[in-house]
Length: 246
Image (cartoon, rainbow, N blue to C red):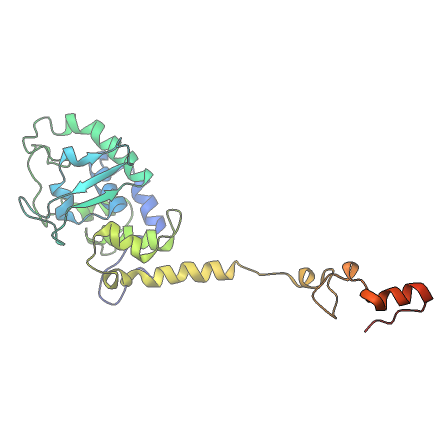
């Protein structure tokens, strides 16, 4: 599996994702923070600025988060407020995090969803021991925090988490300005199409030959000789003359 692409970004393979999920050596708060980023595809700045009030796990329209800020008091990169639906794994991760949060950050004056233990806003660009945490899961190759966003998009486009998403759907989830930006994941979507094609046999030769008459498209047992109609048909019946098929 090719995990590095020409412009330098990468993504975690399904095995690496599993290694992080199942690694008991990664402290649970850190593991949940990593998994939330991976399952939502939020930019790091959006993740750090997410408000607790904008986490909607039991909303009637479906579980989601509202992404309002890309920096304290500043809009996101696209200058739009974005509704990000949560896949079931993201919901599970967020529920586990919410259960930990009161003990993890008892004092949280900014009402952030992912504050530091002291309740402060996390610093933009700071990865909080991310590489050492990956090493605990056996991942020693270069992986950036932003590659968690690429992992989300790649996994959705490749169908590793279930149904393969169309690039337009991935674009809307990530908040890309156009589908051209999302096309970096097209090679993974193409692999899904190729896999589907390889697994699609078409009609077997026996099915094509079964009950077919080489003279036409109707099954052989249903073919009947056509009988002349009208006055000609009545003449054949009255004389008993043999009918010739055309």
